[in-house]
Amino acid sequence: MKFIPNTLLYFLVLVLFIQCKDVAKKEAEITTAKNEIQYAKGLEIYNYEGFSVVKITNPWPDAKENFTYVLQQKNSIIPDSLKQFTTIQIPLKSIVVTSTTHIPALELLGVENTLVGFPNTDYISSVKTRKLIDAGKVREVGTNETLNSEVLIDMAPDLIVSFGLNNSNPTLDNLQKSGLKVMLNGDWTEQSPLGKAEWIKFFGALYGLNSKANTIFSDIEKEYNTTLALAKKATSKPTVLSGAMFQDQWYVPQGQSWASLFLKDAQANYLWADSNGTGSLALPFETILEKAQEAEFWIAPGDFSSLKEMSDSNPHYKQFDSFKNKKVYSYGVNKGAKGGIVYFEWSPTRPDWVLKDLISIFHPELLPNHKLFFFQKLE
Image (cartoon, rainbow, N blue to C red):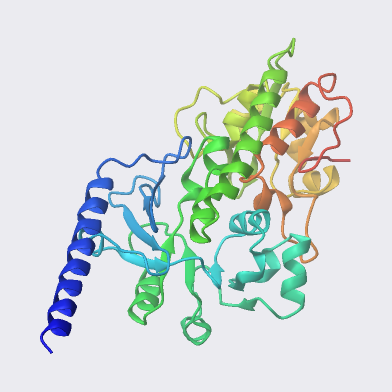
C-alpha cells in the first residue's frame, strides 16, 4: 500500500523539478534573445519556445513610456519575470484593428477572415476586405476617437489593436478594465519606408506566422533595394514641391519625414529636404511661391483629383510652373468603393510600389513599362 503513494510523491517531485528547471532555463533565455526587427525603430520582437515578447518602444512621437506584451502559445510556460505584462493567447481567432494601414498585413498573411470589427469601415479600400464588410462579417465599432465600448464588449474579440496619440487613452483603459485585451501599434510613428513595412512582423507574431511575415517582408525589402539601386542610375534630380494650402498655411513634409525620404530615394531634389523634423512645416503662401514657383514637379497636393479642383480651391495654384506644365501628381485619385484612399491603406506596407511610382514620374526612362499605382497625373 505504501508503494503507490511513494511513487506518486516521487513523480510529483520530478514534475515540479522539471518545471522549475524549464522556468529557470526560460528566465536565462530572455536575457540573451535577439531582437528580430531590423528597420523599425519603435518595435522589438523576441521569440522563444512557446511564446514571444513584443515591445512597443515608440507608441507616439516623443513617448516617455513603452509597452511590453507576451504572446503565449497554448500550454507553454511563461517565466515569472514576464507575468507582470499583458499576456495574449495566440494564434488569434478574432481581431479588431483601428487603422486601414493594418488591413494589408492581415491580407498578405491570409488572416483577413479573423477581422470582426473596424471603426468606420468606409475608409477601407481593399476589395478583399470590402467583400467581408459587405457580407456583414466586419462590424462598425465607432470611430477612432470614440470606440463603441458596448459593441466591443459584446463582440469580445481576442484582441483589439489600436494606437495612441499620447498617454491619455480613457476608452482603451476602460476596455481593458472590462476584460478585453488591447495592444498598441506604433507603425505610424516610423519614418523610414522599410521601417514602416517591417511592422507586418507585428501581425505575423499575433498569428504564429513569424516565418511567413519574415518572407513577405524580405521580398518587399529586396524589391525596394533593387528599385533604390535603379534610381541611382538617374542622371538628373528634378526639383519637387509638395503639399497644399489648408486654411491660411501651406503644409510641406519636413526633411526627415517618411514622405521626404521617399523623394530622396527616388533621386528628386525636394526643396525642403534640408529642413529638420519628421512632421510638417506650416508656411505662408508667399514663402512657398518664392521658393517653389519654378519647381518641375508637384507631388501630393492633398486629396485633389483634378487641376480644376485645385484652381477652384485656390486660384493662386496656377502661378506654379508645375501646375502650368501639368506636372502635378496626386494620390487622391485611386480610391476604394466607399471613398477610402488606397495610398493611405497600402503605401506603408508596400514602399516598393511607392518608390517605383516616383521613379517612373521623375525618371521615366528607368522604368519605361511601369504603370502608376498610387499616384496619378492630374488633368
